[in-house]
Each structure stands twice: as C-alpha cells, then as structure tokens.
Length: 129
Image (cartoon, rainbow, N blue to C red; front, side, top):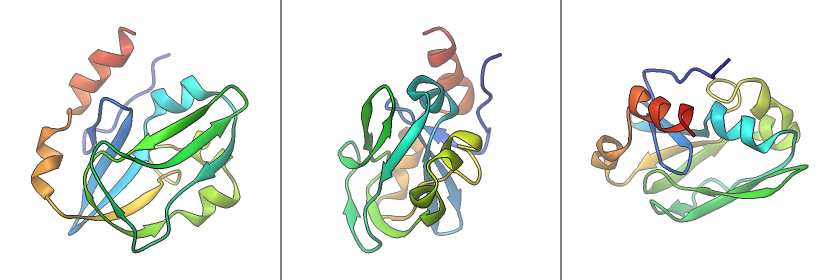
C-alpha cells in the first residue's frame, strides 16, 4: 500500500516536507523517505538558532542501510527541534507526518514554500518510482 501524503504539506524533491503553522514551518521527511530508509537508528539535527539555507544540508538520518543527508526545503532559522525523535529515532518511522517531525523553522522567505510540490504532484513523482 502506498503511503499517503497530507494535503496541508508542501514537498521538496529531496523528500522533505513543510507544513505552515502560523509564522513557523514544521519540517520533516516524508513517509516515502522513511520507507526507503528502513530501520532508522540515529537522527542528527541542528540546534535552535541555527540558520538553514534552502537546498543545503541541515542534518542526517541514519538507518541500518544508509546515512542520508537532510536538505532544507526552505531557508530560515531553527526555532525548535524534535528532541523526542533525537532520543527515539523510531518515532520518525511511526509517524513521519505527525509526531515524527524534525524542525520548527522561522522562514526567511516564505514565498519559497510556493515553489515546493503539492501532495498530488509529490505522490505522482514517488508512486511511479
């Protein structure tokens, strides 16, 4: 069964998603990315206050199969990181679009969100992989 992708998110080619929440954006990786990685054993995320730039690395996810760099879907400043995922990386697998979020970011250019794919476009891209 193909994973579903929430309609209220926008998606990057590199399989990160963003969800606008007021002035902040919640960032995570998609169910597709989690499925491809397999059993996740370690997550590395930046500290609050760190600036991230669209398209550049901001951390990594390590599984028993591979280490994948996380690429920032938008530019901004990290307001918070999900300490629960750092402590228990399996949270990311259990609920990647919910409790398994990675960062809360204050976007420096909110218009970047419009350049990301909607759920239907992203689903079409990955379901035909």
